[in-house]
Length: 254
View 1 (cartoon, rainbow, N blue to C red):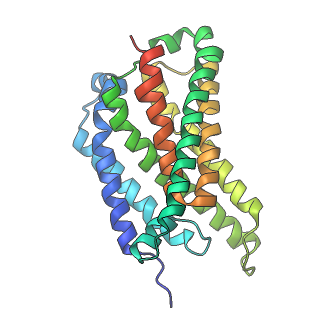
View 2 (spheres, rainbow, N blue to C red):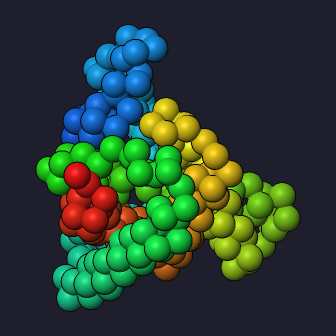
View 3 (cartoon, rainbow, N blue to C red):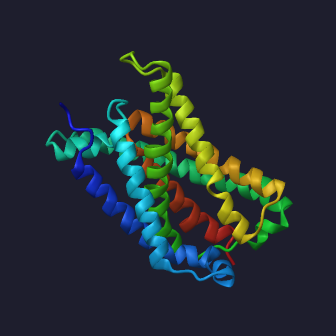
């Protein structure tokens, strides 16, 4: 009987989640920390602990359910098992970085041209310094991908398979797309609480947040499906570097 989860991968993922949650705290304090402090006591240690527990739980569920669906971290799995294809992984890294950079540039252009001129609230957005954006990019690349893709998308696909094709060996591609799209929507909606704390919600800012997060979320989901979570993480991290370290501090920051 095959084991349901590779505990080596789970441990590596748990360490990555913990480090990413710690690194994100300066960015959180710069963007919404002051608002939180005005309303209630903000304890970074508790926040890190909550994120860590949520991330590790999501990682455990995603790794468990993803195994029969051929979803997970195949490159890390091969590396740990001594079957690592270095040349193949380098190709995936290059492709993932390229897609992430294109996403970062595209989101910035759409935001600056289609939304910022028409919403005074967006002019009030706090743009943290690039070093904080760099640290927060690990949160986006690792934790958001664990929550949205490894957990949520995998869960949706697994539920659909259990309901509609439990006795079939192959999983229909439509199930994967359903999981990808629903996870992208979940990913987009999850950004609304931070938006409300920072500048408040209006129809335009809500639409902007949903659109500019659902599109890349769908692409990251496709990368997760086709190449593994490693590809989605690398692409997401690259997009966040372009957004939070390079372009937004230049064009939006003061």
